[in-house]
Image (cartoon, rainbow, N blue to C red):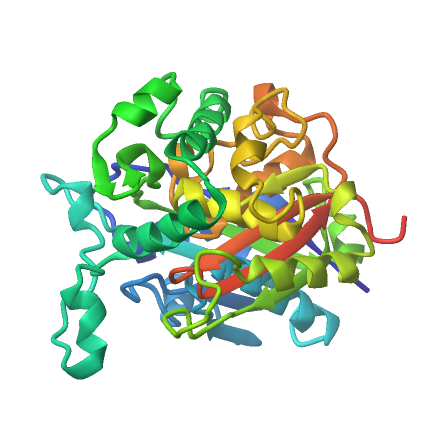
Length: 386
């Protein structure tokens, strides 16, 4: 027996006010169940990614009026959580612990009248001793910390801001064909270079969006999937890798990420090589994240990511279509559910204008913390071994 994703539920994304994360989550799961041709009563497993502020938790079960749930847990791997939830759902189904598992991420950080930058304020708690040094140096939130990683890559390999910009431009080209994307207006490299600096070397257009909304998926056995409403998206392989100790001397922070381990593990489990991957749906909280993940997965050599993305490989018509919905940079920011949802849409062949012809093997990445946690999935519209 193997597992497949059979339902996808997405709410409206972006500046959607007046609703809680739990309300978004209920809507997304209800839509995912309907998408699969199932009822909420059919779901006997629930994994909840509680988000950075723990706005959703196990009490979501009660909000959904679920009873006698067989598998119930929060999964907190930050941006790697979506991949982890799918993995644990597949394992639970394989073990007979549950038959139908819903996985959800919901968030509502945007407040009407408030700036997007206020949504994730970073570290506000008091710190003392050595632990206070990064905060005192200005490393208070994600942009500043990713900026250090990006700068190290630039200093080591000669990567440029313009190359980061090529990632943003490619994502926007895909988003222009995605009706669900928040940002669809044309974007040029000149626009990227003119955008204001957020944390040197990261500019505004190097940074992901902030979104209110939710995404949920439904996982069940491949046998049951064949009887349901939607084309199944089969789970071929998975991997996790959590480097840790990124601030220690001699670490590879900014140069090598967990993708270098979780990617090969997922590919090995799936029984395919990196050259057989048709589509890449990568966690792109920053343009730099896309670039370094591509290197670590082996789509180009280490240190050559800048030239690779600048070649147009990621964009529509390129040799390596990547983040075909616009990613977190231009579509919406739902942690690891952003790349996962687009992977499901593409694998089903339901992406409309942006549909990529070859979508037999789809790689999905999740990145959490500041390159601290990583998950990889290999998905396919085909049942494994066939």
